[in-house]
Amino acid sequence: MATHAASQSGRTGASLRAERRDSDRIQVKGLWCDRGQVLDLSERGMRLNTLRRWSEGFSRSITIVDGPDRATVEARVVWCRQVGMFSHLVGLAFIDPTPDAAQALRRIADRQQADA
Image 1 (cartoon, rainbow, N blue to C red):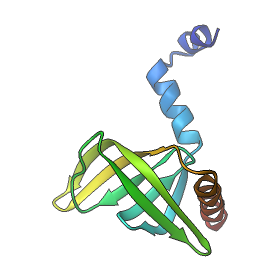
Image 2: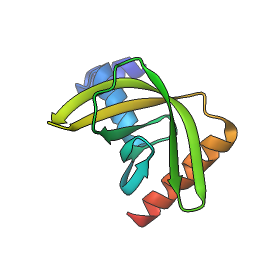
Image 3: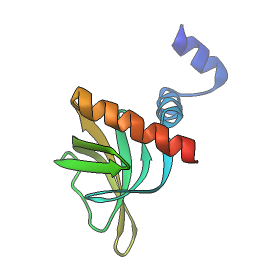
């Protein structure tokens, strides 16, 4: 049924996924983690501006601190694009965050959204 509605509206599965992904992202300002500047954040992942290229599929630990909240999560690189000589955008997906880390991420996102 959803496919039928999407085909009637002219939207593809990819555009519907992108729209759904955009809807839960919080644009952030002035938020940094131990790996670079956080550009947007959701419960499932984040977009990061870094100095170096990261390999797709690679996983690493990321720590975000905002006010009293600290979240350390394992994240997998979904994509990486060079946008300047020393600037790369990295799309990260969080890998099974602990309940405490997920709660801290929600508080950070809520605080960032309230400050926007």
